[in-house]
Amino acid sequence: MSDLPRPPVRGLPVPDRPAMAGFEPDLTVDPNLVNLDDYERAAAERIPAGPLAYFTGGALDERTLRDNRAAFDRRRMIPRVMTDVAEVDTGVELLGRRWPTPIWIAPTALQRMAHPDGELATARAAAARGITVTLSSSASTDMGDIAEAGGPRWYQVYLLADPGARRAMVERAVSLGYEALVMTVDLQRLGRRERDIRVGFRIPEGVGLPNIARAAGVGDEQAADVAFVSRLTWDDLEWVAGFGLPVVVKGILHPDDARLAVAHGAAAIDVSNHGGRQLDGAIASLDALPAVLEAVAGRVPVLMDGGVRRGTDALIALALGATAVGIGRPVIWGLAVDGEAGVGRVLDIITGELEQAMALAGVSSVTELNTIRVV
Ligand SMILES: Cc1cc2nc3c(=O)[nH]c(=O)nc-3n(C[C@H](O)[C@H](O)[C@H](O)COP(=O)(O)O)c2cc1C
Image (cartoon, rainbow, N blue to C red):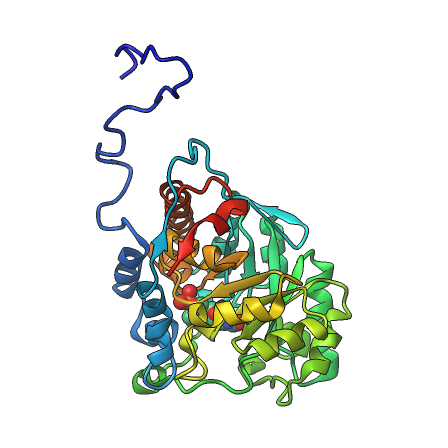
């Protein structure tokens, strides 16, 4: 391309990429691991039956689990053209930090069942990319080790029944530099996940819940029996907000709850149905998003998670008004396939797809997302 004559017309942009760029095979990519669904298939061959049921499954008939994906399949974008997308900036401002991409890692429990390095591998892959990782209260890695990975991190809070243990867990996350507390509000009880029942899933020997064990002052063997509060109300959100970190309320689907969350101190809302693992028949996250956005009316950022598997999915949610989108299971698939490197590839694939989708939609920064339409 470079030795072809340049167009003589002044003022016209000169293309500086080869005419057929994008058609050469990318030999750095494993042809069996091109996208996130490939990672899911590959992971299913590596994870033992019990943990695989736990990671994959949803509640009851898995209607909500399936609908999280189907909701994206139902949507289409109306892109823009002629907007100069030579440089696309996927960066976004959220809770006082500049994010390189509006994609975050949603909390998933017990990652050491997918790979011995578990949450630490996830945190390292995220840190290397400046991507925010959320550590679950039910993580199988100590929150101090995740802090040492040094990247942007949020801590997901399940409130322990014992008041001293409850406080100890949150205080430790605050002292370890977690930047926000993600309060999950859709686990009043554990959803009934029939895949787990059928395979007789048990947490394997050697995989513990160190953050719960430490806060409750019990050994690893007893940690799975430590109780969460059975009565969760908006007062509890105010209690969590009292620690001074921004609180992201995770698991909002109803617009009235979004209003209540803001009124009780939420710094952000995460529209989520827990990956279809709690109330089966609940609305898909993407379908719940517009009404929540309307109710919140810009007072706090609105995030979503559930069923995001493509950069184009992320773009649809962002174009509808989400500030950022979370991914849950795909991180576990990356972890199972190749530890930290696998998580890194999963993140690179989806963030790369988003960057490309923005260019093809004629959007060079997140501030222009409102110029495209989603139908
Ligand atoms: C195996 C697994 C474990 C999860 N553990 C937690 C958890 O400990 N805390 C929490 O708030 N959400 C948890 N979630 C829900 C995720 O944060 C997220 O809402 C969901 O996975 C997003 O959907 P996706 O998997 O389709 O991306 C879990 C989800 C999965 C699949």
